[in-house]
Length: 332
Image 1 (spheres, helix red, strand yellow):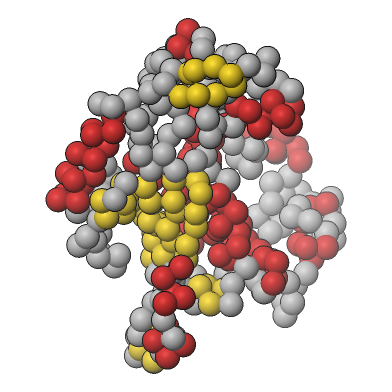
Image 2: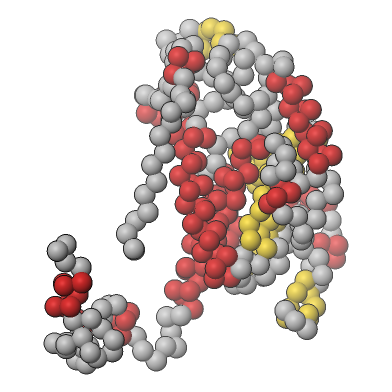
């Protein structure tokens, strides 16, 4: 319809009573304390904007962004859990794995053997009332070439901001990331070659599909690190709102590992960034060189400015007359 899309999700499974201790004592490494430092008030039951619950809006918007990217460019965005604690996934082919592979187990790892080891690692910390972190890897297949801009609007810069805006994120890598510092230029450079079907390609992809802040058409490869969940049931030393040293032992339902839940969040934020850059690319590259600028200058309703339509009877140009439009949309 062209009107803003609104999504309302009601939480019918909240348990505010589980947050009694947290209401007065700050959870170590949680946003409780810093929110009080900044605002002097915070959402006690469930964390408010510091809770991953807020990401449901991002995922809803990301679903629409994915459809746009798929329709216009055939772009596919897939994320999966590539590490939990010290367990790293193996045997995942970024060119061929599917969403069905990711959703085939609760760890959201395409390799079943790796997933089993991840689940075991999570269970070990869960039974101790503890938590663990991990890494989500996201790949983008079929990204249009030329997305991104030099200096301040580099594609990886916007992707990094989007990823690090997600709850519990502590690190971001693109391509070789920090491992690239262990190589030389001759080892790290992605050599170009001409593919008879797709044109210019790179033989390797250490750049992660982005060079100079601009997409080059190769698979975009990202890694996002998530810290262990702050809320654990083990006793911890902390401070309450009165500045008194206390011991905190959280109650209620808290994930021992947030990483599997983060997979759709990561995909959605990547999709939103790519749609933004696709729109900016179109705006920049389709402004000049046009023969007809009337729709940009005058607007999208030719009946309001084009002499061929003004005062017409609806028969010119396939436009509906005001009278016919009024009749067609009349409540009667």
